[in-house]
Length: 87
Image (tube, rainbow, N blue to C red; front, side, top):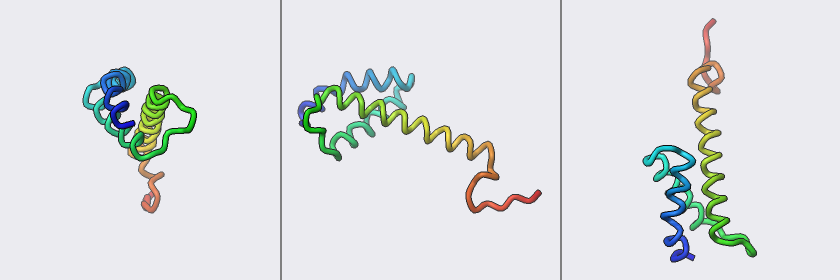
């Protein structure tokens, strides 16, 4: 499977760039995707290519959600747990 993932890297990198619009972000997304692919078992009947692209997309969605939460927490510090707001 590692060899097949290695062969997919150029295509996954282009896909990651199409999602992020930035090469540094695409490289980070690609790294996270490959880490997840190697740390999990591929579903039994799944096609490796389709599974890899789905994982990449899901990692990107997770990152977008996390960025939104961090942005909202920065804009509304009163929502940060444990912080006391005088007012």
